Image (cartoon, rainbow, N blue to C red; front, side):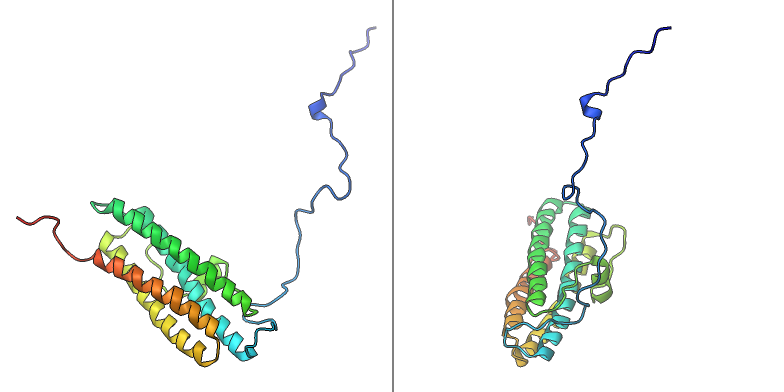
Length: 203
């Protein structure tokens, strides 16, 4: 009786034993190290209560900026009509500028010892920017929605800047004025100009 031929294992199927320290522990769970709404003590010469208040106001603006960024991207994708190309580019440019503001606000919260709102679901709970329809609106309605969001943010930003300056938080005041307010005003100006009914030619 003939015995079956011996089988060999290809090199690609051979498994090398994994040594300790090579395989990363991929699934880990930990404790929350700092609760949202609290601040760590940092040597920045600003009172605890001022930092708590500053983080609260900055986080609200941060949530609004995240929602405004989302609005810009949504409308950037869904535009249509004769002005599609120029508005497509403009809204994407504005979205990019809002993303810079998002990062600056988040880093300011962290520099005050706080916890920046980062999860979009959390931001949606804090924001004052109304949620748009899930579908497509007409272009003038899209622009109007963006303008309303800008005005809401600018009103809150001016109030926050004034109150934070009174508390001695000059850094937060400067960020809000130089980034949130000045960028928001310029973007609102550009958007409003596109709602003017001006003919391209005159007969």
